[in-house]
Length: 426
Image 1: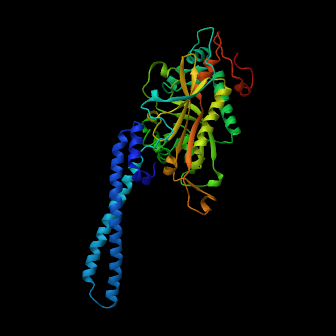
Image 2 (image 1 turned 45 degrees about the vertical axis):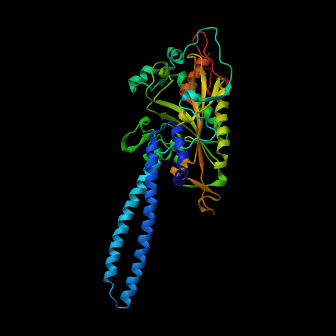
Image 3 (image 1 turned 90 degrees about the vertical axis):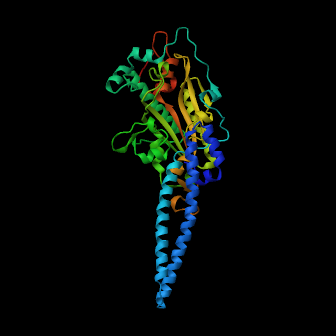
């Protein structure tokens, strides 16, 4: 959430940001917010004047009564003033609630380094790594390889739940477990603290990180007002809601493995075949809380961490700098990492790494100062960042397709072999 003063002082910059992010519907919310804010400030001025008059009249009435003089006229006047104060206070509370509601509908401002663009076609490739694999045979897509070998059971998932809920069997399940251990071990070596967090969050948590109201249609809501997490970022970031952190202890680095749940919509054909787009998937997430002056250095470092994993897995990838129109509601700057899928002849996104700046911590009411909550000095802002390291389905798809053999088997990347415990595939 943007700070109200920032919006009030820079309305044109916010308008430009809304248009740049292709979120034109937020323009109406912005104009309503500016009107409500102006009315609220005028009301506060009137209220303070009425309160001062009420206090002065109360003092004068007391003096008149002590002198035995008639105070009836002044008491009648004060009753009218008191009624005005009550009315203004009620209107003020209504305006404050409306302002808070409208603030949730205003997106984050893109960083100056983010290129303008209207769609995914305007994203900028800023890095490529690896040589695209070539085969002496026709490469198969992962769904043919894994289903034929019995590692992936899509039909069982449909029977149990529905499309987009895959079942992994035998070596396929062990390969998922190997990815989990490898990713978490790599992040531990980078100084991240591993967490196990709830898969359900309440509406306050989803609102604090920006999933609500922006992505309500993409989340699964269950009984008692809970939501299944679309990413463990939601739970991890809320660890420090309503807290004052110790600025000297920043950055805080967290890593969490979890199942993730998303109501993906829309695409057909190869875009949704196999593991390309599923409703339940596993992911290891990185989250950082940093000082504002260090957050963009942290963005580069987190992205490099995810890239190093892809390099160790031997997967050709590219880094995209996302344009304004394809960046999202909460992000100030975002990179996507895509791996090459030789069986499909296309790039697959496996990681997004984003700097949210203070957009989430303003909602979270998370701040920092030296010495923490008991320290001296005014608490200052904290920036949050998050990134996938990595999302399992498409990473697994790329591993299967990159390391496939002509006989339909799959070799295992060297980085994963210590986690399989015994001879695995080919």
